[in-house]
Image (tube, rainbow, N blue to C red):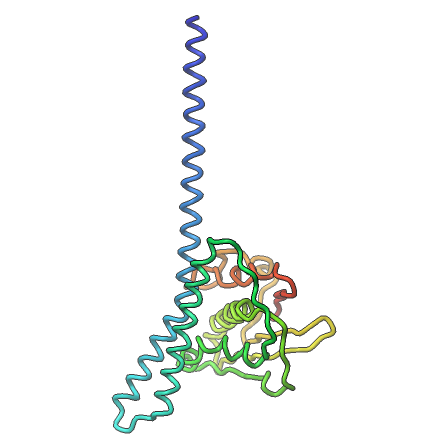
Length: 239
């Protein structure tokens, strides 16, 4: 009886330790998830906020100028409004991410509109950094795609953001936006004057938190990669 009681206590203690260990693992997993979500939110909101700040500063400079350029002021105001709408849209998507999956909204969108919408968040910033945007897509015949605009927009924003980081150290930096029609579909191209993607890291660039820069959490391309599983979307990479 005493031996049985002793082993019962050992079993109860071991079971308690096991349950406590599992509970700690669950808490640690939840904290890690919260940390990743917080990093993703900061990453997604930072670009619109930077654009709004730069556009506001440019607007103030024009306002304080002896001869303000009202066309420039209107352009900066429009950029602020559109970028704020983008940030609000990101927040709405994050709020709905915990709810039941919603149907994708698919519509026919012009390629020009897809590129121009993605560039709204970068216009002032790229100019202030001296980065030239080559809009080669404007030199091609008008073309539209049957797609989910929000998904394509997220992918293009992440690719342009990474291209921006890649060309900062170069003289006369540029980013080219173009598209290529193929039998299988249409390629939307984001090319820059950087050195390209090293083969040693090519298989890592879409991993969460992988980064080759000192700034940024390394979530940009992983966010875009999450959409690769969506039908009709893929993201090959090259130089």
